[in-house]
Amino acid sequence: MSVRLQSSWSCYGIVLPSLLLLTGFVYVPVLWAFVSSLYAFEIGAASRFVGLANFREYLSVDPTVLPSMANMLVLTLLAVIMRLTFPLVVARLIYALPQERWRYIYRIIFLVPIVVPGVAVQLIWAGMIYSDFGMLNELLRGLGLSHWAHGWLSDPDTALAAVALVGFPFVGGFEVLIYYAGFSAIPDSVNEAAALDACTGLQKFFRIDIPMVLSQLKLILILTLIGGIQGFENVFILTRGGPGFETTVPGLWMYFNAFSFQRMGYACAIGVLLFVIIFGLTLLNMKYFKSSEELQGVR
Amino acid sequence: MKTGQKKVWWIHAVLILFSLLTLLPFAFMVNNVFRSNAEFYHAFFSFPGAFKQVATITGRALVGDDTPVLMADEEGDLVPVSKGDALGRSLDQATRGPRLAWKVIRPYMLNTLIVTLLTVTGVLLLGSATAYILSRYRFTGHRALFLFIISTMMFPGVLTLVPSFLLVKWLGLLNTYWAMVLPYIAGGQVFAIFVFRSYFEGLPEDLFESARIDGAGHVQIYWQIVLPLSLPVLSVVAVMNILGTWNNFLWPFITNTEGSHHVISSGLFVLATTAHASNFSTLYAAYAISSIPLLVLFIYATRPFIRGVTSGAFKA
Image (cartoon, rainbow over all chains, first blue to last red; front, side, top):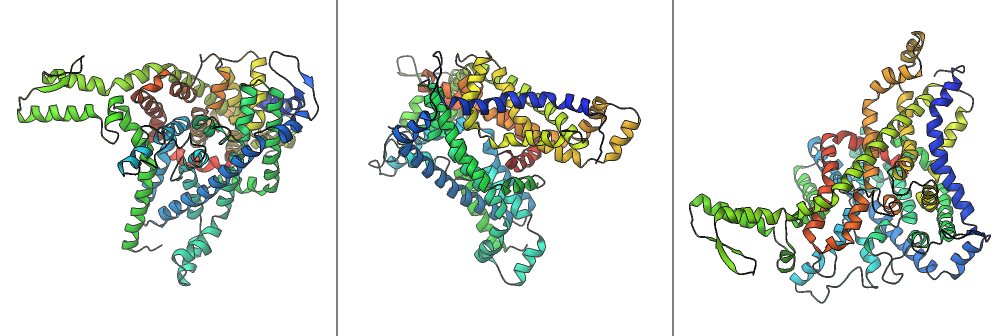
């Protein structure tokens, strides 16, 4: 490693554009969020310092806070369950194939859908579960179960479940590749020792394979938790939070407050609260930064 | 590892089932590109009628069957038409959706291309330059600089979404490419810096030492040593960045208040929620066409894709 101090000024000059952009488009908005959350501020009107009133209002008066937090919890937990199981099983099955050619082909098959824009995927799914001329309902009618067919996303009883089940069978190419990388990194000696001890099948899966990909599982877990707490694009596209507040999540409510009701300060307060939750999780999992950095070297 | 032949067939069966279920929505999409609304209403589960028609006409032509083809005229009555005419009308019907869709999304595609090119260029240049300095030099504030960059990773998008909008509005950048490009470069370079930094640290110091002895400056070392040696990692970062930029929906949707600079993601949403939505084939054709550029990139750069997605775990 080189130590060259005399060229410090040119070093500063080269990193300057990076720093300016980070300051301008990351640190300034972060500070702005915290400051704004203490103001009542609508575009076009004067802003007024209100202290913690935005937070108080959100946590005690806002009618959406309980249902939206509950929805967020349900959607996040379901997402965690899906992403820790289906792709893991698929990755393990791919890993078990003896021929590298097939292992490659299946990895490609599950990865290919990432070329379709995420918005399009959500919209296609919306088309598949529409009440009229959606694939699911037509299928039910075809099977003589037309009394089951209904607007999955518009019925208050099924809307949340429908949002959660979009993406079935939840075998994302990203997760499959991560888990597959984990399985591939299991040393041959471990597999050989397991074989010698006649540890095979499900027993090997639970006793050896899963512990060996624990860091990958933790990584997907934390990514899914963070994504679930702050994400609302899918809900926005599928239902816009409706019917009523049945599928509203806090992030979506922040969006509506900012861009539909023009309550920027209030929206920032919701953003800050979500950040606090995510930050708490991050602190709990500080070591994941390390484990994910290690992952980089993995093919 | 040894796996019995019978077991292998079981694994294939399960994997194929999962593959089919995973690809089902996309098959649904492609099939619907060529189907009229009428087909949607009367024969939901079927292949495009226009294609069946083409197959029938071709089949008849091959066996020399001169039965005239019956097609609906303007009033909806079935009248006999010549084979060539029928063929032309079938193809016209099949391609109606894609043609309409292309007309609508062409400006979105162009905008996406411009934004993506500007972003990926900026991220590669700034990211690699900063990573070069961070990995090859030690200077006062080195550690602080690194912390400054790494700390940005703890701020989630949900915290900065609203103030970033206010900032871009204050800067007068709403409805411009810069509203997207500048924040994308600012955010995207962080991932790039980490990937580049760990790669550059692995390059032998002798290279740099001898270049410096020969009197090479930063620019020369960067252009003549660092960049040529980093092509594989450059492609990984480029692919990941393109993927992210292409998929970003909410930010372009918010910052294009006048709808003049929509990119493909926000444009598709606008398309799906406006009058065009009443024509299914136009919608599905728009989804399908918008997937083609990344599909081409995927086929052309499969390995960087795989490596990128695996290392993309770091992005959070």
